[in-house]
Structure formats: structure tokens, C-alpha cells
Length: 104
Image 1 (cartoon, rainbow, N blue to C red):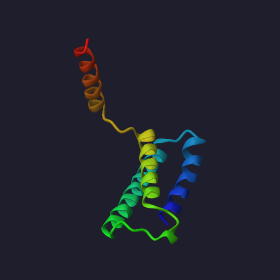
Image 2 (cartoon, helix red, strand yellow; image 1 turned 90 degrees about the vertical axis):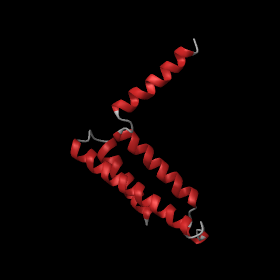
Image 3 (cartoon, rainbow, N blue to C red; image 1 turned 120 degrees about the vertical axis):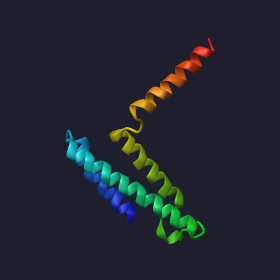
Image 4 (cartoon, helix red, strand yellow; image 1 turned 45 degrees about the vertical axis):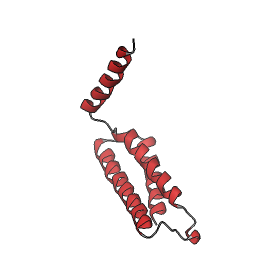
């Protein structure tokens, strides 16, 4: 069922975000839906681990399939919403450039 939700989400996403210039409301809804799908996927993984890590082969998917799709959704979330605050970006750049200067 979760895979079907993600497939439906991807179709809507293509239509609303990639083929048009999305407004703030659409982007906000996209963020909420993708975060919900990520949380739901993580809950499925948690339940699989709690149940001994076994998935019936008849389901047609593996734990790796679920984890890969979660990662893909997280990447899309970062693409549209960013993942780092301005302060965190500045902190990382400072660390990188300070480290580079200390090697000179």
C-alpha cells in the first residue's frame, strides 16, 4: 500500500511541481505529504525490524527496496525544501575553509 501511495505522490509531484511553477501553498503541501510518506516508510522499517527483520517473499519487495525509496524521498525533500539552515551552512563552510587554510 505504501508503495502505491508513493507512486501516486510521484505522479502528482510531476504534474504540480515539475511541469508548473509551484506556489507557496503547493510547495507547503508537497513538504507535508513527503514528510508523511518518509515517516510512514520509517515506521514500516521499524516494524520489520521489531518482527525479526523478515519480509515474506510473496510481498514482492525487500527491506532494501523500502529503505532505498525512503532515501529517494529524503533526497527529493532536500531538493525542494533544503536541508540546512543558514547558520549550519555558514558553520560547515567555516570548518572547510579553516581546515584548508591550516594545511597551507
